[in-house]
Image (tube, rainbow over all chains, first blue to last red; front, top):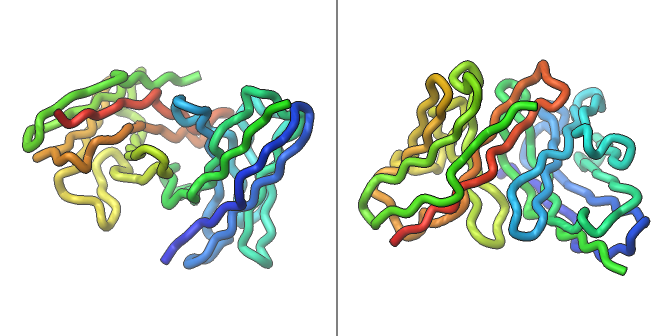
Length: 119
Length: 109
């Protein structure tokens, strides 16, 4: 079955970087995009950006431009999201999700990775 | 940028019909998708392209979209439907192609 499995929880200090992985299985990785969405504690969903697994093209949310980088490794069907210069308000659960580019919906989602930024 | 507005909460008795709205300027011209998120879990797609259901989603879930409002309708509500629901649109021509609504907490009385 189609599945996205993310890396484990992280605790980082302010100013550090974090890199979250998302390993896909059960489908042709390069036929879809991967999007990243985060959710701060008790808050709603915030779109971070997406990457085409076909050609590596990216589109990042403006508020994260310059701090986020999304990449893929097609040899292992894995997507990565790196966020730099972490602040306390980056504390959130980070989700990857398969993007159906034909219509822009996300299905399925990874299980989520909690990133805690604390001194 | 484009804004989607959802009511913070909706309450419904078991067996009744719940309607969750998602407002946006001329949202009827866009494709709307809906997600269900239960506590501690990842979101799950329940409606795409306004009214299509993914496999495995009960027929009790339906969607519509017209004018400035999209609606997720859950018929014969069950206790297990209690969750947060988010609407989302995609505009591939925009610099910010993905917008989520603020989410609606559905409470089953």
